[in-house]
Image (cartoon, rainbow, N blue to C red; front, side, top):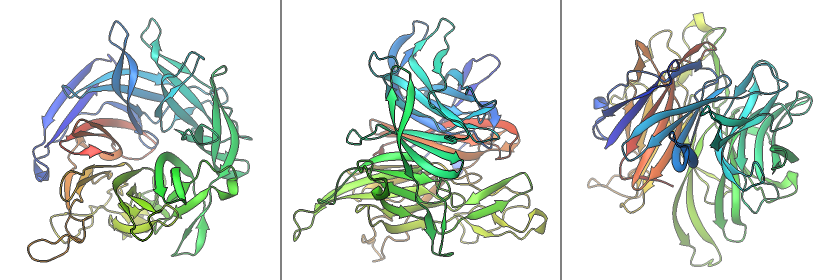
Amino acid sequence: MITSVSNRAFVETLLPAVVLLSLGGLALADTWSPIDDADFEGNQYRGAKLAVAEVLFLEGDSLQEESTLLIAITDGLDGVRLYSFNTGNNRLTFEDEVNVEVDSIADPVAWSPTFMDLDVAGTGEESCLVIPTTADATYGGSISIVRLTERNQDSLLVVIDNCFKCDEDDHGDVYYVAELPPSAEQDYAISTEFSNPLQNVILLASFDSDSSRFDDESTFNVPYLYYGARHEPSEARAWVTYVQHFRYGSEFDGSLCYTTNHNGGVLIWDPDTTDSTDRTVSRIAVSQYGGWYYDEDTKGELGDVHRAAILEGGSSTFSDLDTIQVDCRLLFFSNRTMGFIVCDVSKPNAPQHVWQWDGDTRPCEDDAIGGDWGWHGSGDVDDDAISKADGGSFPGETFGIGVASNSSDDPPTIHVYLAGGVDGLRLFDLSEFLDPFGEDTTGDSNFDDFSIDIYDNYQVGLDAMQAFDLQTFTEGDDTYVFTSWRKNRTNTNGPIGLTVHVDEDVECD
């Protein structure tokens, strides 16, 4: 069963109210009900990025430290709003809003936040929200830290700004901060972009508790990606880094990182290698990149990869090669404007393409908007015919993705969640599909056996919202799917929404 939760947190009064809607069964996509309001307004071009984690947080009037599931969502400007979610009663509650500042930047933009534990004051690790910042109009950025277990008398969170040296001649925009495994020489990976000269790098950094600053110790230049269609390299801009344990005999027996790339593809690299020229394990490029234009002010890029998730499977040992044990891993990553891709990364230095679910990318037939590429959604999934969207419709953009499974089922239940822009929030059941040699009663394989459930009726007033970012959280046997929504992707301010869906009896890995 899927249920939905929406929160209305009015900026003027900061008083939360909750709407709880039942959305019926998984197979009944047409019974999913719309949610009737958004949370707040922000710059929709840059905002609505999510982070979700269970952290220690000062709750209630007594400011008692409690383990709390927190959701951070950016407003596309200098603000990040925090919500708590109670899985006991499915209640989403507005908690607080913080703003970031950078000494050298007039208009900083809060980018993709993440939760982590930091020793900020030299008294031991505590729960923090780490917010990278970029400049609105020029290059430049920094990092802000929000201490989640200390508030002042005004019940505002303690924000420490300027936690990273960043200026136009040194470091440029900062997009993400990730923790590295304990085996790595440095503790953190910072995705950034230098402006002089223009370089896309991952900074390997440490954290100084005395100064509350991240200090970059070495630089990993992100390698170019190559596209078969053009036989030419393209710059890959590091976005979000994740850590994953790999084991494939003696060749890989430790934690590797995979980093999504804004210009398309995923980089797998070794944080334990001190030689920067030997860090790259493999590169996975998407099939296409380029740009589309809706009008002079609204444009986007094909094939960008921002979010990814790995599904771990069982282990098997080759009988003739008893030193090699394989843990099966499938990498799912969103392929912006083009759906999502599944790769087998069990052997990380030789990824194998498994499948791609395509959106409908086609040449735009309307000369009035430049005749460039226009993505018009994937049509009606209940009908083989795919119809072009109405004139003036924005292209859809897949951004957020998550995966959950139940390995006790036979075959294992595999659910993939996709935030697909104008196509809304989709749930793919790939249980049979990814068990390709299973046969039904007719003797057919399962290669074409998958289903899609769609939640695409979220509206604010008369404005249809678009699903953007997506994060998952598992408690018990249930997976909670947090999705951000925005009206469009122009540079104007507009509504940003937040919903929660519960997928029962399936767990995140």
